Length: 236
Image 1 (cartoon, rainbow, N blue to C red):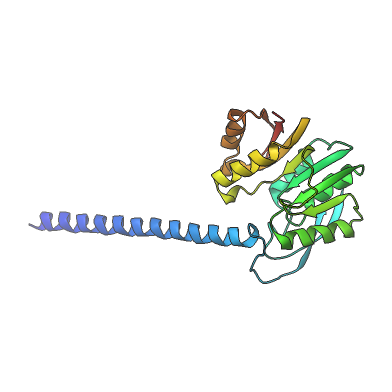
Image 2: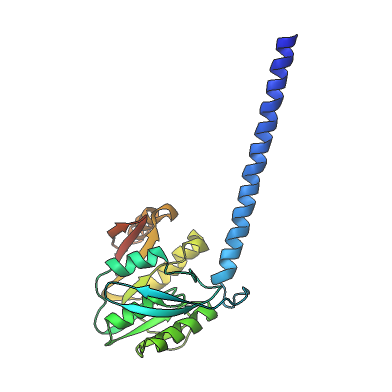
């Protein structure tokens, strides 16, 4: 009887542990959804509700140094995102002339680098986040870069084709939204143009490369560092 009671007690403990684990898993899913909602609200919306928290960060690259104004409600407002750094330290020089695109510019570090490295080109810094675009414009003015335009995706005057696209794309918007966004903008690559995208390996860089290839865009990995991949994508 004692053995049976012990076995029953053990079974009860295992059932309770199982229920506790199931509840913990559900709680994590709920927290992930809340975190995703907060991330989306912060910088995937036109007018973030996050209270302003202005700041300044130093963007120091081997060939460039910018002081950038940042704020809450924009992507990586507290520092230069490590993926952006990997992209800017490994990407080939942009075309010297023509229209260039920074897709999802945030406060503008990629666009600033493109504009400084290609002073004879026009750089279009595109984002849905109006707060980010205001920061990007201010940072371009601070850096004395008159060849940079900060605009929304629907802005009139956006070119139909781009000689190059650089982007740290918003992976967390979800796979379908990401694919639709990339398909739309990669379709604007001029003949012979190239896009360079930086994506974290753990957030699907390799699967994104496979999707690009399946959709007809030649895509290769040109750099891999600190858990990030830099993908080079050719026009179809």
